[in-house]
Amino acid sequence: LHALILFIVNFLDNIMVSSVSNEAVSAVYAVNQVTYILMIAGYGVIIGAGVFIQQFNGANDVKNMKQAFCYKCIIMLLFLAVAVTVFYIFGPSIVYLYCRSDSNSSEIFRLAKIYLYTMILSYIPYCLSIIYTTTVREIGQTKYALIAGGVAFGVNLVLNAIFIYVLGLGVFGAALGTIIARVIELIVIVVICHKKKFSFCHKL
Image: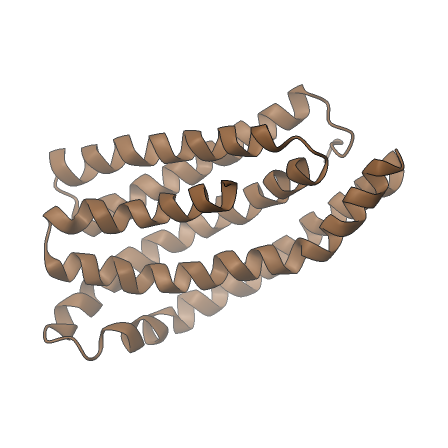
């Protein structure tokens, strides 16, 4: 369910930019295909550590659980450094594959680049938040991941309405709303985990 909410947060941009233009919808859709690749890859790089966290949690092995969580942090930061670099350099080329056959491909590509280069910033809080949201699910505290995801959805909905409909920022506004929503989601899940003093949490 949480993964569905994460997908909807991004898909929300597709829906809400429909009032801007058809080109804006196509541009956001093309970029979100790239974002979806990152979402799947982000889960993939830490899924192995999640298996160990479940085992260590069942055995009440706090020390090794913390080590597995540290591994998640390290591998995700490495993945993030590579992913942001790759998408910054090659992202426009990947996006162009999705819009090259459209009748107004030049305008779609122009809007897509604006959206992509702004959305890249959202990858940072997103990847950091899934370290926590996957871990709380692995220790059986799934509701907190849903709370963080629900907050992100609500924030994105409100900010998109303001940035797109009120301020007229178009695809840039949609991306900006998503970035802020991702940052708030990260803050919410981190604060919850440390306030609840979950066993995997420790000082930096």
